[in-house]
Length: 248
Ligand SMILES: O=C[C@H](O)COP(=O)(O)O
Image 1 (cartoon, rainbow, N blue to C red):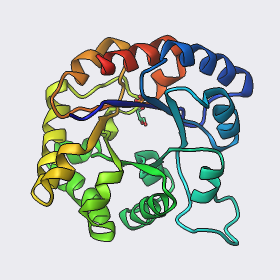
Image 2 (image 1 turned 120 degrees about the vertical axis):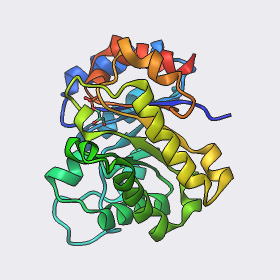
Image 3 (image 1 turned 90 degrees about the horizontal axis):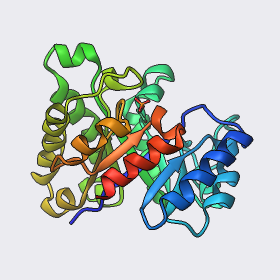
């Protein structure tokens, strides 16, 4: 039986004071519930200090594909491990579209994370134009194949996949539970064709305008195993309610 996992992606939000209040609210409320927050790099130490010993893991939103060296502004997997990170998001659509991260670099980052012992949360998903052109499955398959070809299907046994339709991110426009389930089932089926056990165990999160109000319906779908939450993860009551809905 797969365990659901909800992870907050704080994106470029927060301050020491705001984070302290948010972490202090979610920690006791989620006692015993596995969840995670992926915070901006400068706040990793704060998340580590606040959440150590709790059921909430923490992680980052990006990493370098390089292990070390003259790469100004980059952060390595080993550095994330130094701050106790468990997870790192790779291939978020904002990184793909705003920072030109192509499938090949996403696969390298995924492998760098795993080589260091971090669990990558691999984001896949189509744009509105791609959905309207009927190529959703082809896009998601291409994004998955990049990683499968580079790292092998077995690597997904130590990863989380997040399906995030780009048109639903930060727009208030959630995919319907049926739309999301259809793509989640496609992802699991594609992986099952290569390795049934990996597909059965794979946590596939949904991301895109998840809120307390729509979480239960999404989490009730058979192939939705949690969520990757942007805006609502910054609001303690919303994040707590989403995590609780997933844990039910
Ligand atoms: O990583 C999270 C997603 O981009 C979803 O963001 P959102 O919940 O603000 O739509």
